[in-house]
Length: 90
Image (cartoon, rainbow, N blue to C red; front, side, top):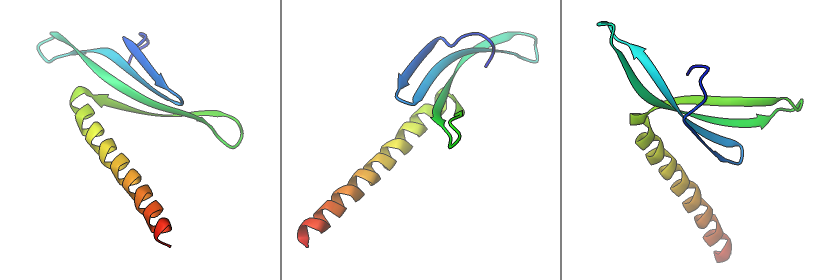
């Protein structure tokens, strides 16, 4: 990422996703443009200092992240439902 602002930003609570435009110079001195995504989570630590965790993603990473998050969400939701069913059986 550069000092330029992102093309777009999206926010949900402490999470923020941004789309960035980048350029890279190739061996033949031509310049190609491409987009990347940053995903940031912000939180306050024990001392009240704001902290950030940021990951940079390429376009081809996004479907993989979505699949992983879907699986995690399903597992968490199903585990919660199973626990509720077990409690009802008691």
